Length: 95
Image (cartoon, one colour):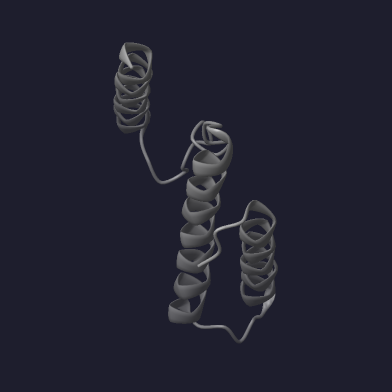
């Protein structure tokens, strides 16, 4: 996988373009659609990881609700994320 932000962005864009093509294809079966969706998710995670390691920026995707998750699950995940960010900030401040 890419270690540069521009390369990770290109990989994400490629995964998104393929995802749209697969979802718009009436002949695509569920497995093909699921694989395309999984590739997009993996590309997003990788992009976020590279961006964070290079710039320290937080995720641009974390606030996006998943239509398959209920509100309590989203709130729980958000609280967990905030807790992890606070621990990371506290650790950096103590150095």
